[in-house]
Length: 438
Image (cartoon, rainbow, N blue to C red; front, side):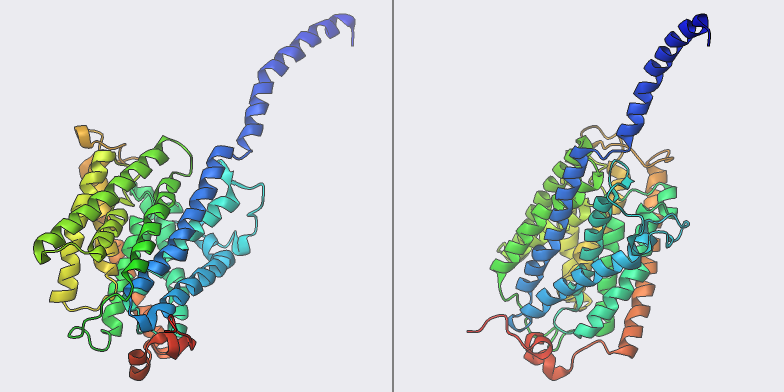
């Protein structure tokens, strides 16, 4: 190379280096996880698992009778273990694999490719997969409240595994895994459709198929330990911040707004339920205020990342009133023994919140304005149409598949314990242990 060419080349190289260096640095940065977001989702993951163990376990355990408290705790633990292994084996791949509009693929079977350096967005895929696992755990655990005190343990395990595979996984793919509901522009920030509608509808179908507990509805079946139930409910409230605010998948303003709306909805739901109970029965109960809190939390879940604080208060208040009346109607009028009120609280709340997201996400509501509709949605009418389609399809699909799974389990191992075992309690009948040795 001549000296003249060399003199021309040196500035050219320097110029290209100056132009390309920032791009190379950006590409390298894009391949690295965001430390703040990663730390927040790690924390949220722990909070959501905390909702099941020990939150939901203690909440449900306190609400059943003394002779069945251990059975509920064991069921929540066993579901956590079973779902974790199925999630690793194939469920994560089917829920979040590329696949098609209806289901994912087997590209991540046994979590192949989920490695230390693989990313989902700007967080490690290991963190994303674990975060989503905690949602998959709590959903079938919620259904336990419908058939508490009367289902065989073998039936519970078989039902939970099949239900996760045939109901939770497809619906999660439809909404969060790039499936057909996602492509329609549905709004479900943290699981109103995926978690609460599926669990609530499955609970109602389970209660109908199994029938009521021995003595229902003439015999009072009161919670055996409200202190335990209130403690568990408090854990649910705290854990729900990971559930909703964590679903932003980032430590940002969206997560902060979701947390604020979630908290306000829980407070409003608890206060509204307490007020309704006070007016109807003359006294506010501990059971009422904590159930209203759960109703407020479940109802705000699909809308939490799309609405503002005022929207959260309205949604929580409506949840407390509507879910209170739904509980009374299911138990007293229809006489369905959904033991721990899963359908009227989670199912009805999930539907209500999913529809409310289509309203309060609007940016044109003044004080009650939200953060905007789904991608490709032109206005409130279209968004409500998409939300309604999601609710109807999820209800019908969940009801049909749940019924089929229950009937299959009934043929294979039977669903209910015998009459004597039910009267004596599942703690001794199924586990040969007592919750209390007094």
